[in-house]
Length: 70
Image (cartoon, rainbow, N blue to C red; front, side, top):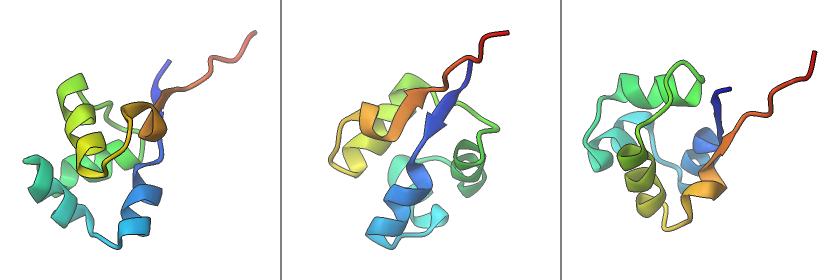
């Protein structure tokens, strides 16, 4: 079970680049890209920093992906 996120949508609403967000939360642009594409699940600390940057609750940006039943 991975983490789904709305990070790209939040960035688009604020009209900021991956690089700009990365600088604000002290990670690389590649990390932001990996989070957005689902290749990397952020630590709790990073998820909280991102939510704080967007002045919203972490649950609005990040949620657990639903596991499909076999």
